[in-house]
Image (cartoon, rainbow, N blue to C red):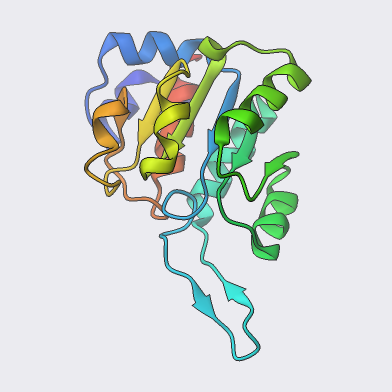
Length: 177
């Protein structure tokens, strides 16, 4: 279904090192605000948080899960909308309120018995730096903070909340045929 030529056609040429790293991925971890959402938070009149999520990102996540690639959320924030979106997508591993994302990563790796080379992480800001330094494939969305981009092996063409996660799902699926 996914061929390397499609990645080159729809995104841009991917170097062999990135493709080789993507071949090993068994777990995609996503931040939420600025990655799965566009980073905008709307507050309802009763103070409830409203976020928008991209349907294309969701479809990509469902395709990964169908191919037995785990998907997890590790985020510094917390909201009911994150839990509801994860439930809808079938994401079982949700870690909210994580100021130190490495702790959640270690718990998750032990739980599902994977090593760091099998992990891709997609983030957008300085809180993601430590985790991006140690995973097999670190990704920054194209509109990530400029100080985090040097820590990424790959920078998406798409913006956070506007298809960046789908781009990574396509990359992983394509690399693994």
